[in-house]
Amino acid sequence: MSVTGVNRTLYQETGNMRKEPSPGETLVVYALAVVYVLAASRLFRLQEPWWWNLLFPIGLAAIPVAVSAVRRLNLSSVFPVSPAPFRETAGALLLVPLVLVFLLPLAQLVAPWLPVPDSEDPAIMEGLLSGGFVYAFLFIVLLPALCEEILFRGFILSGLRNRFGKWPSIVLCALLFAALHLEPARIPFALIPGIAITAVGWKTRSLVLPVLMHFLHNGILFYLLWTTAAGSGGTSIPPINSVFP
Image (cartoon, rainbow, N blue to C red; front, top):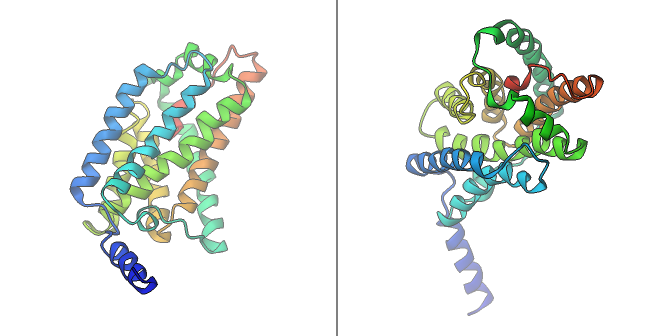
């Protein structure tokens, strides 16, 4: 085959790739993510600092990427990574502490009336933190920020964008994001930052700022969690785990 023929074939194959997931594919990926979280909660045990636990958040990203590859979706369209202007970046990152200024006092106020999340089990948290700073940072901050955004502000938001209007898509994506935490006490606190992150993802059509916002959000909370636990010798875990998105 000539070079021209090869180029024409590649162009046709690329042209046949769809840019967004269908509603059915979006539903399937979310269902797979729910099943995965339920199954992985039994497979991965946080009481021990086993490094293979880090595969848990990675699995959340692997599901949509694998489905996109199998269904011949355009990965650069489903998971866009174009940089945002400085003003939008600064505004998005400033939004994170503003959300936390609201969420942290709210969590303290309503905590006595909410069921205790499984993630606040002292044995689980002490086991997680006992793995050391790098292990806890990867598990709590970096990998969730990257992998959850690939799933939600990547695949799911791409599937909702052209099927619904702006705010229905943003709210639905944030609701699905919050619901995947599968702990009633955490859902309201994941919904609020979820709406903020999704709104930024909708506007920028990129994963860059959602990942940075998620990273900053979890990083601030991790700092509070780590310093408080370290100061108390690991005997006191602050009740902020429900605020992690």
